[in-house]
Amino acid sequence: MSALGPDQRKVKGEQTKNKILNETIQLIALQGLKEVSTAKIADRSSISKSTIFHHFKTTDDILLATLDLLFEELYKSFDLQEHQNVEQFLSMLGDSLFGASKSQSVVFRAFFCFLHEGLFQPSIKKKMLTYSDQTLAFFVAQLTKYSPEASKETIHSVAVLLLPLLDGLGLHSLLYEDSERFEKAWSQYTNSIITLLSK
Image 1 (tube, helix red, strand yellow):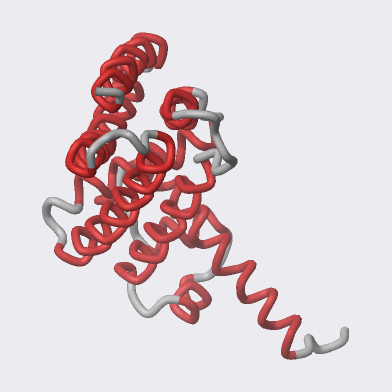
Image 2 (cartoon, rainbow, N blue to C red):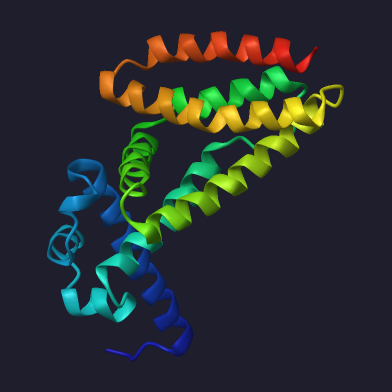
């Protein structure tokens, strides 16, 4: 058996780290954040606890790295291609939530667990607020591009509304296991938003 070169070890290390994080997402989505332990992650991933601690110093480090990965996955769900207008942009946001695949639904479930825990854990809250600010800036940029006639104040107000609106509809869609009802609500909200931005 030949020894791995430095580049191969780095690649293998990244693969192991990603497997740990992906299994942590699965575990959180199934059991919630409070149930996460290194032993459970090791069991799910078939990776030893010592190997996990080689990549992460603490369970909190695993959770914060998992949150980073979750946001990467959430941003990937946005279709970042150019849209014709604000209606298409808002439709894309709804589609990213209500048209989510089963694997994307797991990401959303884990995300909502972190959102809840951010109320109690300062390190998670800090990271959630950073990502919320980034998402707000993204919404402002997109709304400005697609509704140049709207005032900065209106655009900012709409952008501030979008994030909790998407979070709330997404959470209730998962709770009720009824995306159709909440997709209709999203459609009604987007019509109101379009009207507001065109004033």
